[in-house]
Image (tube, rainbow, N blue to C red; front, top):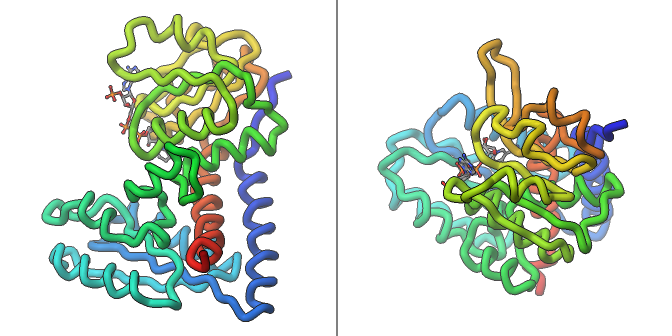
Length: 282
Ligand code: NDP
């Protein structure tokens, strides 16, 4: 029987643990605060921002919302980030992406102080992950490690293959799997024989951005498959990068879409907010 990894339940469990931790911190006089900045009113971004605010409210994290108009200049945005960097009562700063075209994303993300970079995108945090030092880790791959651990799936010594090498999913995923003592191969659009490589994987993490591309012939019998992709199909239903129907019967465990990796991203963002307090005290 294939184990369906329940991301919804695991993320709810993490949020409940954080809620308890935040309540204890409050009793000791420490409040956790996340500043969320949105520039413009992109409807998808507004949904993500609302979900983040709701998660904060549930856990007991104070959220400060900065809803800035589309025409906000880069200079104004950078000035706001600098102000928040300097505020002792703000622990985490999150800038919702994508930003309007006239604002340089990299410049903005690099301006967030590394100790408040709860998305884990700042080069200092990426570097810390690379050399095994403490720091914030990109939320989606961090969530995948939690999904594996909390589902009783051992990573150490396993053949792990990651499809995709983006800065927010593929690369940090590979680094985290190495940290957990997996033997890791990263593949991408220039990989020569993808099926041959993925066919060796005990744990296969798929972050390609192509609906249902990974079919059963890419997967070894008994593998664990983590589907990061998220798309809407012709019937407006959500689907992943993995052809779940054909792949699931071949796996020992698999994440569904929706309800797999997706819910973990916010849970790990909340986790980073709580951890930011300790990081700032050091
Ligand atoms: P990117 O588009 O940044 O990266 C995609 C990667 O896949 C690239 O490294 C690319 O290779 C590789 N790739 C593309 N085509 C192929 C192919 N035919 N064979 C092998 N590799 C290929 O995407 P992201 O990493 O940002 O996201 C991946 C997916 O995950 C998307 O569907 C996204 O929506 C989803 N996502 C979901 C999240 C969640 O919370 N559930 C969070 C973040 C992303 P190359 O580098 O050579 O171009």
